[in-house]
Length: 161
Image (tube, rainbow, N blue to C red; front, side):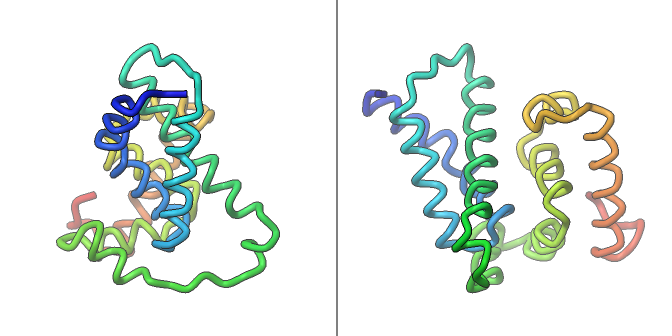
């Protein structure tokens, strides 16, 4: 079990990342908050010793992605339609870039993960491949295809992605 100072530091450092990942996967503020709490509870109860800050950040990303996937595997959740609060949530996350966020959220899940980790978290394709446990060439392909989809959704070749 971790001490209070470690938990506070981790929450200050990784809360935004965990929340954004939850929103990208779940598209529901309330469900995202549930997963957010579960991720940090796992952190509190975990005895994992981190080699570096990057190792800790990768742990949070991996645990968050897994928790979101587990959320959808739950029978009850997979057979109900979530209440969409997407517009309100977009304003909370990025008021200036809601159109871009909406386009990213509309991407298929396999693209959303790679785009988020690359553009929002600054990971390289090789690092993303390690985090998502995919081949690096697969990640390059996902990024290329997602860029093309975003260009189409945001209005052509002149948009910056």
